[in-house]
Image 1 (cartoon, helix red, strand yellow):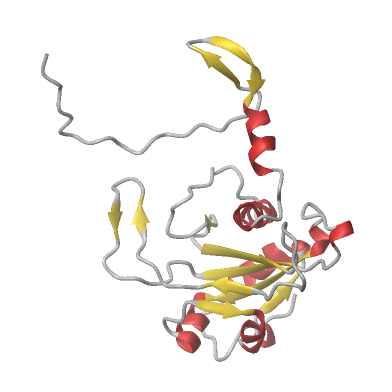
Image 2: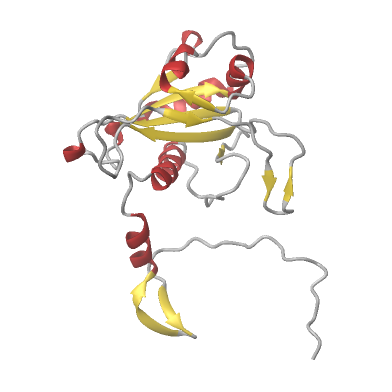
Length: 216
C-alpha cells in the first residue's frame, strides 16, 4: 500500500486549556497519574532559569489580566494587551537552584531576533525587537532560606520601551542591570505593573528613558 502524501501541510495545533485533572491513559483506560503530577514533577523548581522565565511571564500576564490567552512558547513577543501593545518579559535572579559561592549578576537577553509566525511557520526576514515594551523582572530576594518566587514582594520590575533599547543599544545582545538602570526605566512593584505599562504604551516620544516623564 502506498503511503498517502499530505500536500496541504499540518496546520497550527489548537491547544485547549488543561485543568491538571486530566489522567494519563492507555487508549482510554485511566492510569493512576494525572497531568498535575507531571506539572509538579517537572516544574516545582521555580528558581531554575527556564521555569523562572515562564513564571515571570505568568506574573506579568496575571497583573495585566491577560491569562485567558494561553502562552505560545515561540511567539515573536510574550504578551499583547487589548489595545495592541506588545510586551516582552525577561527574568533574572540573584539566587540559583544549585550551589554557588556568590550572588549571580543580573543580565537579560535583549537580542534582536527574526519573528516566527506559528500559523504559517514563516520567519520574518530581518532580526528586530518585536515588542513595544520590555518588562525586566528581577527576583530580588537574596536569602535562600526564605526564597519564595510565589511571594510577589520578592520581585521587582523595570519597564522600558523597546524604542529606547533600539536607540541606545542598537543590536546589543545582552543587558546588565547596571546598564538598564542608566536607561532610566520605570521601576514598579507587582501592583504597579498595569498602570506602568499603560503609561508607557501612551508615550510617543522618549529621550533617554521613561520614569522622569511618568508619575504613577
